[in-house]
View (cartoon, rainbow, N blue to C red):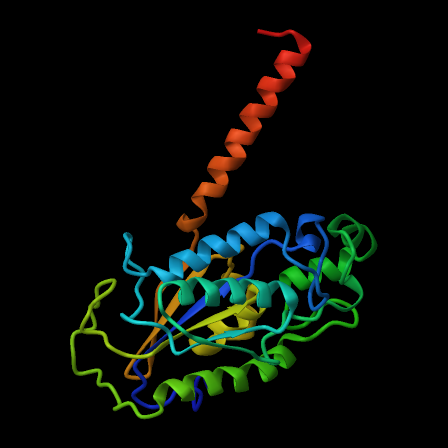
Length: 275
């Protein structure tokens, strides 16, 4: 039986916007973090600011495929890196006059990585080569020693999804599939509730597999970059992937990095006397 049976309310018209958190200190250090907590780096805070500004102005070109008006709520993992990112989104929306409720959800923390948490990726590759290879090939059969199995992660994520989706169905008339299924970005006719969910790459893999009724063996088919945006729309209860892993709002960071690299090269040439 597909995992989405009984999860998505009948006739639901709604949109979920998934946002991965910004860069954390453990990520910057090349360490596996899992459910270990670490704050955002300066780059992570800038990433959070850029994605927050993008979500607070969804009608700006290129238009995001979300309904008009503010979201119903901002739901986030209680881990610090996700909380900081969600708070940035809340503040950006407040600046445009959208006072959106924000709440942590205990079902949304990242997948526990057990003995791997806090270790550098090179150390894990050296000490746990066989286990790491198995995790990458057969993620339902192998995982980090002392970590979470994917079915257990799905078991805690599913009730959180059910709560979020049920809140979107409250007081709304069921939609119908007897309509055009072609929907343009920012279509004003698509008036329905939407929410922002801020979390983690591993958990979002599970979220997408669950919503689309796919087997957990396909865990590695999805990926989300830091502060990327993914949009799932529900049309009369049918999930539709409207956008995945959008990162254009972070382009200024790449420009800044390139400028900093050129400046460092110029300073090095000046110190060395090279022309």
